[in-house]
Image (tube, rainbow, N blue to C red; front, side, top):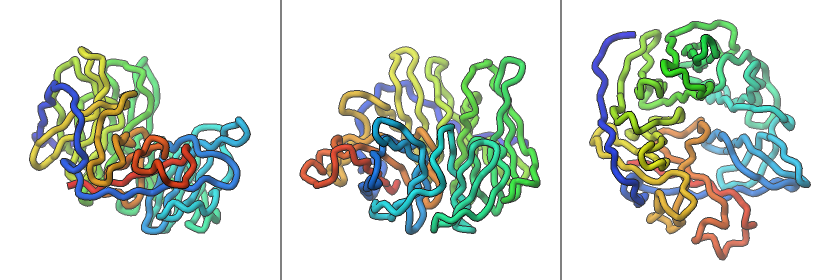
Length: 326
């Protein structure tokens, strides 16, 4: 790892406030997802966005039973087909835009399908989250050893055959967090978030550079799902003093920062003053792949969107909002 002083952001221990979407975004796109002929979409944990399609890793309920499925929609939300089979265990999505393929990973292997839903091949999986970047797959593998999580940043060829270890780090506080490490792509660079040092590292070939660091009170804790979205750092955490969860948005260039309520039960957080959809919940729980540069995603149920109250869609329809950030 090369030494280079990172750009540091001092996190304000400020009071959460509601934020108008127009303060951070220039536009908002809304996509209402149709449900398959059988079943009701309960939630989405990951999705892939391409120029023509949306692929979702979805929990689908059919006659009081839950199924995990990958569903394909067009960009207007119209249901096209199920990709792959039904799954009982945990799965993750992988995307190879060069080959126009999506992968479904069980942690041991990745089964790839083309955009027509046809199976095209299998590769070895080496991480929970695998990101396609510069014709390679990147990911962070994990192992629990000596009472702490230990992580290794790796890269492999697209077949998952040739591996190379780039960087290792561990949880110094021995927190049982689990293998939840996030990767981001910004302006042709790959970044990963190390929550223990509260830092984003930039990967340049086999070189790792600490690029952005968050400095905060020990009473402020951050979660493992931090991302870089265009010129914005988006990270969720908890204020230990107030016992309140928050979402922090930090502009890398201007250094302006916002702290808004996160997953609050009452109407609060980011208010859509662009299209009038009400308060929106940011989607940081799982990764979003594909054409996502400079985009912030929200997922809501139709019944919680005031502007859709008169529409003919079922009340439990899921709605994806895509904001283009300033």
